[in-house]
Each structure stands twice: as C-alpha cells, then as structure tokens.
Length: 387
Image (tube, rainbow, N blue to C red; front, side, top):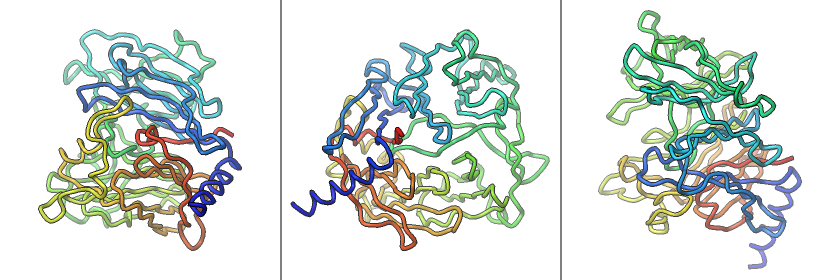
C-alpha cells in the first residue's frame, strides 16, 4: 500500500509540473437511443478528480465531439433539443463560445469536421444534404471574439481541404466522419466527397496500393505532423497509411492488429488500441466482466458497441513515434483502456476508472504511475493541460 501511495504522489508531481490536468467526458449519442452529459474534470493535488463544469446536461447530450489539440480547443455539437455548438478553450478550461447554427429547412447533416483555413483560422464545418444534387457546406468560426451573428458562412466544397482530425476517441466512439475516396481519373489521389470529389493534395504512391482493393476509405488523423488514412473492406481487411509531412514520405502503419486498430494523433506520437475479432476461442474483451453493464449519466454500457461490431479488445495499447518510427507498447490487460494525452514526453492513459501517467524515454514507456481512481474517469475520452 505504501509503494502504491508513493507512485501516486510521484505521478501527481509529474502532472502538476506541466500544468493542471483536465479531463473531458462525453459520448456522442448518434449511435445510442439515449443522450449523455458532458463535463470537465480537474485532477486535484490530493489525487481526487473534481468536476469544474457541466458542459452539456444529460437530457440534451451531444451529437458530435471533436478536439483540435494544436489549437487547444474542443467543439461539442449539442443534441437536437438545443442544437448549439460549444467551443471549449483548453487555456481557460471553460466554454468560451456558444452559437446556434442557422436552420436550413429540408436539409440533413451528413458529415461534420474541424478545419483550420489560412484566413479564418480554426472552425467547425459540416455538410448538409437534401438530395443528390443539393449539398451545402457551412462553417462556424471558433474565435470567441467573433460574435455568433458573424460566425457562420456558406463555404465552397473546396473548404474541406483544410480539414483537421485527431482520430478515434474512446472504445465506443460515435462521431461523424468525412466521406473519403480516390479520384476516379487520377489513381491514388485522395479526395473528400462533399457533394463532389475534392482533392486533398495527397497522392499515394503505386507501391502502397499494389494489394487488393479496399473500397472503404476514411480519414484517421490530419494535423501539422501527419496525414493518416485508413482503407478497409467488409471482410475485416485493412491498411493504414501515414504521410509524414516534415519529409513528405509515405509509411505503412506498423502496429499489428487483427482488426482495424483505434488510432489517435498527439503530435509526433500516434496512439493505437489493438482490436481482435470475436470468436468462440476469443469471446470476450480483456476485463469485460468488470465493465459497466448499464448506461450511466456520462456514457453507455461499455461493452455495447464492441459486441455489435463483433470485436474484442485485448488490452494492448501502442505509441508510434512518427519521427523515429519506433513502436512503444503499453500493456494494460484491460480492454476498456485508451491513451488520452501525450505531452512533454509523458503519456496519460485511462484503464477503466483509473488514470495513469508514464514517462517516454529512449528505452520505451516507463513504469505507470496511478494518478487517480474515480468513476468519472471511465467516461473521460480526452485530456489536456491548462498551463
């Protein structure tokens, strides 16, 4: 017990040296019959987790949550009862903007994404569609100094070229995705489909597309470091490719996973959660008996989505160093685990209702340090430091 307490204290010292660690909870209800609350929590000096703000009440919920780590902002698109867009600023650890998009009758939201255009800066964008020939791209500027009445604009389809993405959050992620594919006239040219194909400026070399055709294409990560794309088919075959922007080279994602791993981008690091197929010999995710069996205020029953998808989570996480191409394993032996943040050579990750940190060195990921244990951590899928 004394050793465990020492690890807790040491981990807190590491965390507090870099700022106040905050957790963001939320589960988009697009795939669930009920809605869930979202809130901000702060790690206290005594190892407790304190709610500092309820962002979205349970009866409203969120349709979509996106995080743009490089601009230090999160965007929450609220459920239909409210329909507003919330902007959370990491440096303030608070909501800094709330606007309701203009209503367009006869249109339905198809995709939503974050973007960072050269002139307007970070924004929330989405595609509405009424018919095959009736598509509308709209954007909202995230800058809190711009009033709501001047924050929205109809955009050309080419605006999707400035899309940013940080990957998949949580084992039960329900956020929208931009439709992607390849230019039918230019093999290998990556496009986003927003009523028409828009070239994103990336062309996959022939040697990376010599295998079987994988028809389903989706963006994984797009930030200042990498552009990562995933291709798959209904049989479970997949291929992840990474374009490293500093030297403009393509790489195959080296993490081994039987099914498509869940990946997220944290600057020079990409985290991955290994995924396997559910079989009679491998029927359960690691630690599944300890998972939440019924929905909570902040999130659904943990095992619901994994069971529907026919997958199991073995409890193995990885960090891929984009610069050195090293793969660093993190073994949790718990399927309900995920990396929440990588900053200052420290990785913060969640294992069920526990929060850990560990140093990253030349030798790999160091010994985990327990930071906190709290039920709220189970629904925390994002983290940030308030400096």
